[in-house]
Length: 178
Image (cartoon, rainbow, N blue to C red; front, side, top):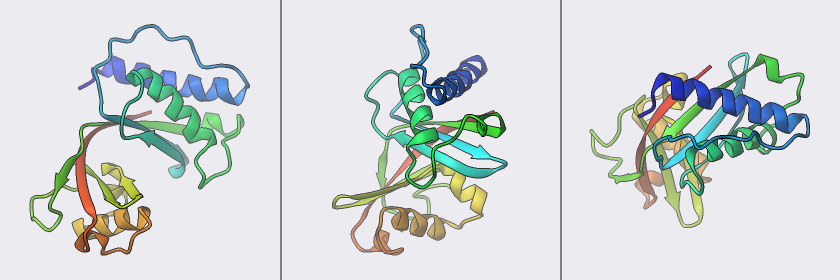
């Protein structure tokens, strides 16, 4: 989907957006990027391999580069699981960007419904929705059933919610990082 030069540019843009925000400056001025369309984007921040923030969007409301800026800034300062990132922490932080393809509803009980490492999952029921990126299952060494269970829990549902009427969607993601 993206050329290597585009990936590296987006990573620089994400880092600059975080740095500028932490120093009380506005978002960087960016040229029209000519990047392809995407369905969604998430920005993940880690420090020494430990998650420090990860937020994104499933439905793009602005061009990809603008959403990367917003998601990078929000991941650093608004992820409710963590205190805001500080300027002192930024040099030891690494940034990953996940560009999401469209959601496809699946039958999670089907053997070929999704592939660990390739697909991310979204589980929703009523007003509850949980999303896990494809790399999460790989990082934790989960089986397909464990991936489903953890995605259900992320949605605030029982681990077996996918067997009890919750809708399950898969998506492809192009994941790259520093």
